[in-house]
Image 1 (cartoon, rainbow, N blue to C red):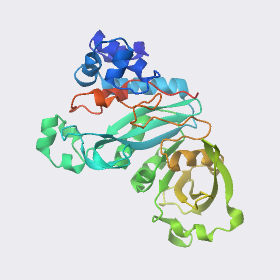
Image 2 (image 1 turned 180 degrees about the vertical axis):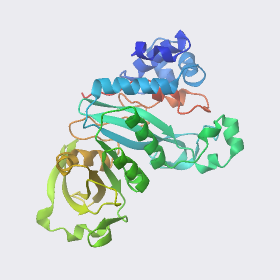
Image 3 (image 1 turned 180 degrees about the horizontal axis):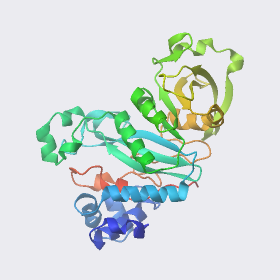
Length: 363
């Protein structure tokens, strides 16, 4: 892997530190940051790793592309899923790019944090992050002076929603001819019609969660999705596993409704998939699309697990639980950056350890 990315570095020392960082990120350390990784590698201080992440000259986007190609060489599968999700990094100050008080999934509440959208490539042989985009809130894009102080280029200052960022990431992997058939995501992404149109335009299917108050087009007219379960006869629910849990298979009851197309240009089939927790009665709703109904019925239990799980980074039964978008540095094999070690970062963002390759393989 070092040989693959070597041309992206202007000097040998940052490349060597990148190799040390990669080794540390896939090590068995209980907590991974620049200090712990430096100690694990026998260094007296984390200065080299901190220099790599904040000041060294190297092409982070080029390394990202190399990582993507490496992942496809190892895990590529025409039925793979592109999982979009955001995660946050809690901050104490106000100078890190994109920081403001906003909801952070890492903390589970509103915190002073940075938020970024990530794209995970998930296939039967493994999964890994392959792209990322920082979410710049309007409190930043509407403040040119703040952007100037952080060194954000003019062309990067336009406000973009999280679904818009996700669409950009998907556009990029499709342009790179990454083999995949599906996109999965939570309610943030399922609610956006432009993202759904983008995915269909690329010839991909999707399983995207939506909120209970959303309306969907049916032959009886637009109907709120939470009104549909009462119309389902008991025999129409089917019990399937959504993957292995700590106490055995995670069994749910499932039902689906055929939906009308969203526009006149859409081909393929649209469904609403409903998941019911029989122990609690909790319901989850997913908008599904596929060009081919047979493919949709064959894949939907796995896809629903990826797209609608309460833990948004959990992958289907055939794949291990993903830690790709978690910021908990204690998670094994985590692909997130050791941000706590870094000084206050301005542009370029994200912290470049997101581009350092360390994909996950099934155990």
